[in-house]
Image 1 (cartoon, rainbow, N blue to C red):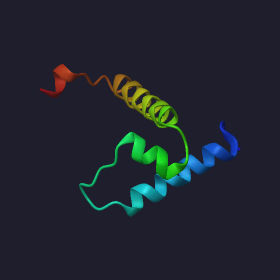
Image 2 (image 1 turned 180 degrees about the vertical axis):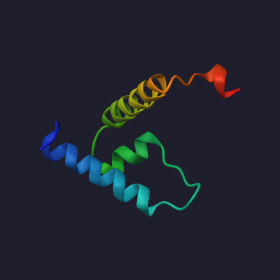
Image 3 (image 1 turned 135 degrees about the vertical axis):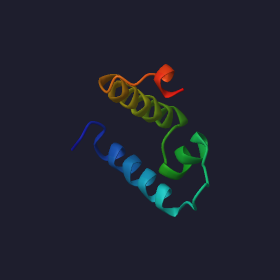
Image 4 (image 1 turned 30 degrees about the horizontal axis):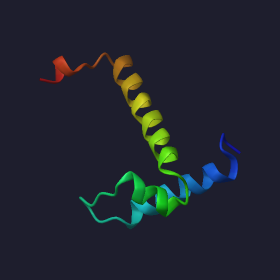
Length: 70
């Protein structure tokens, strides 16, 4: 199992089900996602932080900056 074990799998499954059950344009707050997945708000914040860090690193590798986007 990946880091986080069963709890990590539950969160991943919960987020996937949540994403599939939403209508286009619908959003959910971090506390709503946390309640849906059965974890703390802090756990959802940590997942978001790691995801954003991965996106930033990928953009840096591609040499994309905000200035180039404008």
